[in-house]
Amino acid sequence: MKTASLPIKQATRRYNAFGQHMKYLYGQAVYKVNVDAGFTCPNRDGTVSVGGCIYCNNDSFRPAACTSTASVAEQIEKGIPYLRRRYGAEKFIVYFQPFTNTYAPVETLERLYRKALDHPGVVGLAIGTRPDCVDEGKIALLAGLAKDHFILVEYGLQSIHDRTLEFINRGHDYDCFKRALEMTAGKGIRIGAHLILGFPTETRNDMLDMAEKLSRLPVGFLKLHQLQVIKDTLLAEMYGAKPFPTFTYGEYLAMVADFLERLSPDVVLQRLFAAAPDDILVAPIWNRTRSEFLNDLDSYMESAESYQGKRHKT
Image 1 (cartoon, rainbow, N blue to C red):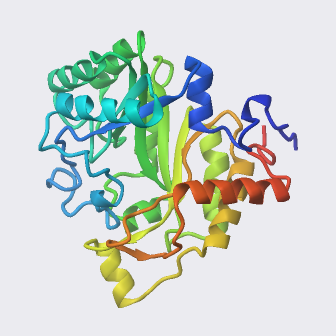
Image 2: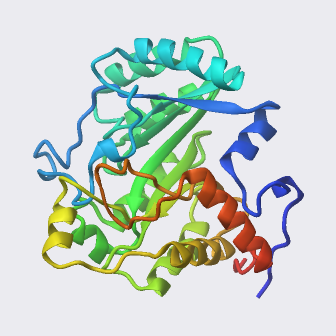
């Protein structure tokens, strides 16, 4: 088995971090402005199912300022000055975050996306969506925008294992995700995926297997985080009735390090940790911030001589 060496461009992290990647592309830090464009989800409105995924409560990850009661333009106009004041930011990506952000006619999407790109300093878009909510027309729109802008489509996958997708009421299977990749690849659009580690339907080896399989697909960006049990979800009801094991903090550190070792060093990591608000988090309770986790992960990987791609099979 051929092993990868630690790339020079990963000098500040032992993995290919999104912030470093964007700084490499643009010569400076690029900050995300989160917006809620008022989309819903076919897994909630009855098109695919009702109730959504069993773990889903958008309040667990959506910033307070990200609300559809304000227009996209208003959210951007409020978000950019804040980032400029706090971080001295000059370049931005508008992140269409809650629910399914390609779930509308192409004409509606084009109006929203172009409006976001019109703001000074905005270099691109990140668009969270589902693999069953794209088609040739929507991909053509994104490909056109990608000629002049950074366009990242983040496909919610959550797991490559169909038994897990069925358990969480995802409403699509792994083959659907692969078909979306085939439609998107080779058109200048950056492709991302989102995985959750820790579903009770999966073993540790099942989770690690996802790193190798995704590395063989045209996925350039990845969001990864631990399963969180959130109030007001079906998963919380299940957990209350019959608690299932969730990661301890140490177990998750080890899992992420092992996962990254098996992942292609070319994949850019956007997220490795979730931190739902304390008032809605049921389990696991770690009392750690994202920055604390990333610092602990750096220390863990350094002590273990671990780095992204170390065990990746080429």
